[in-house]
Length: 559
Image (tube, rainbow, N blue to C red; front, top):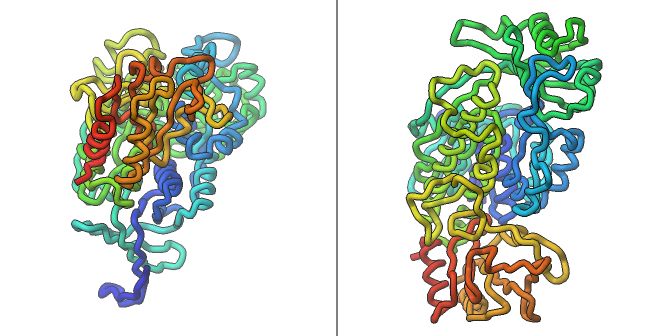
């Protein structure tokens, strides 16, 4: 729907464009929001002031939870194809020089021994932002997303029924007014949207600064040899830095410390200085180094005090900043987008109340607070170049650099929000990884056969709530779910799990699905569209339909 109007400031005709969701920002989180909304059939428009996707090789670490989401969204194969060049790079090396075999591996394999397969059908993937963003863009557009690059947000006003934004084409200068039900601000750490809303931030603030130097060197591959690292921290006190391979052959990235707090300017990072610094850090005085680009960046630990203001939501770096060590920031942002997308779809499609959207802040903000603290601690553990942590930061955890990583990236949980039966005071990140069907946690991965096809139970969670119940000990859950799906108009799919002829899902290897999901025979588990357990009935209920109806009504804030 469009109509013509006239603005008093420029007196030129322009179009009012109506859309359910406006996304501001077209980097990883904005594009992921577009992809997830497209998968759910939610019309939206994305505006991004830059003319295209990222051209700089950064933000390469996509953790297992993020890859699970991309798997369900149908883009995992394309992402792994785009990331094929770094497929064999796994470890993190810390060394004073790359000459010889000095130094130590902080870890040599991301998933040593293949233990991750017990928990997930996916795995980590090294795909740099400049390779990942085009994949997300292509798939979002193919699904009908309206993505407008070279388009800048000039202003917005929010009221009780929506958001009115004015955007400008940087190519033509044309102004367009967009009227949206909701706005998602994925516009970066200096978010103009967050600033206009006056949302404050908490946390230590700025941590350190680096200059990212892209360069070519043919001989460096010979120096590196067969050490296929994700990153190498070079610890020469006169020339420390972090080296990252782009293609393991001649294209590389080097992060050099930058100290603006000491008056150091970017202009001081001349090509000559960068070349000399890289040579000294690596340990080869005459190494061929051709600088191809430089980009400054700042690491910080900040979390917005609120992720929602009326009809506007913050996601990604606009909501939280964290140290890049461990790639927690981009992954947390992508998972923000996934959490928010299904809730927006539910409210816009009319099967959930507006109050469901409050659970976005209740769930995602504590995750960011816990994760950002872990990211800073990891920077301390890895002695990130240029980082002089304050006393106490990163201390007290013990257990080595890899301690608790899976609990952070896969085991985090929602004690509060659109969940029932949780302990609201429980920690967001548990001490140990526990994916056993507890409400508020990511549902367990179970290898099953569905109509003869091998899948993971995680593949079932995207467009609807899913009820898993016991085929071998039927107690009315399946029938109740079928009736409620029709009477409540809630997207609800029911699967019976077991070995009988009625079972839609048959576990591989004789796995007991009830034990895996923390129930007794005859129990049931309700899983949200984002793959998190919403509610669990550990045993049969006398009135399964009433119990399930109450759970759904409460969860969806339905009136």
